[in-house]
Length: 283
Image (cartoon, rainbow, N blue to C red; front, top):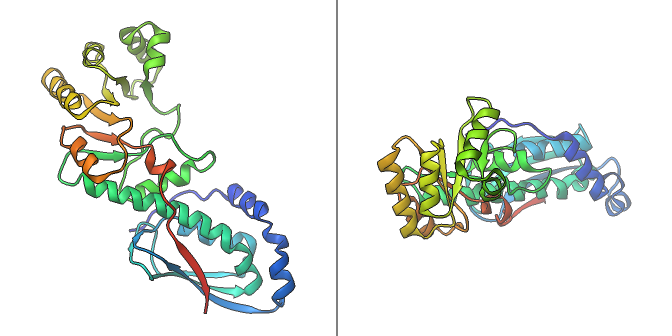
C-alpha cells in the first residue's frame, strides 16, 4: 500500500539540530571522513510500517549522498526481523542521522500498528476508527497520516475544518438549540455540525436541533445502545460517534461497535501508542 503525505522539512531540520547531528563528536572522532558503509533497518516485532518517507528525508537532509532503498512501503504489514530498508553512503552521515530517523519511524509505526489492531477489532460492524486532535504538538500531520496507514480515518485536522459543539460551548451559548443555530449561521453550509452528548436528554435536544452528527461521550454501553436506538428511530440519517475513555482494548472496542455507532474516535491512537522497535545495523 502506497501513501503520499507532505514531509515537514522544517521539523526534520529542527530534529537534526536538536540531536546535534552536524557535530556528532563520537562519530567525527572515530570514523574516517572517507569511510563508506552499508546498513539495514530491521524490525524487532510485527506491525504496520509508517514514516519511511520521513526516514528518507532525514538522511537526505543531512547528506544528499546517502542512498536509501526501501524494501516495503508505508502502510505495509511486516514481521519481526524483517528488513524494511537498505542504506548506503558516507558512514558518518548514516550514523549521525540514525537516531532521528528511527525516532520518527518508531513513533509513527507505533501509531499505525495500534490503529490496525483497533480496526481489526471492529471488523464486520459499521463502525470506523477515527483519531482525534490529541496529537503531539508539531507532529499532527504525520501522526494523522500514520493513522491512515494503519487503516483508520481522520477526524478534524484542526478547529477550522469542522463544527464540534462540546459541553462548554453549550454552556456558553445558552443551550444546544442556540449553539446549533449559531453554528449553522456562521459556518460554511457544507460543514457538518456535531454535538457532544453525555445523557439521553442531551441526545434528544441534539435531535431536535437537527445536528448532523451526535457524539456519545463517556457513555456506558447500555446507555450508548439506548441512545443509538433513539437516534436511529427518530433520525435515521444522523451519524453517531462514540468517544471518551473507550481505550484500545479489542474486546471493549468490539462491544462499543456492536451498539451500532458509525464512528469510534480514540485519542489513544496518537497519545498512547507504544513505540515500534526498529534498529539500524551495519552490514
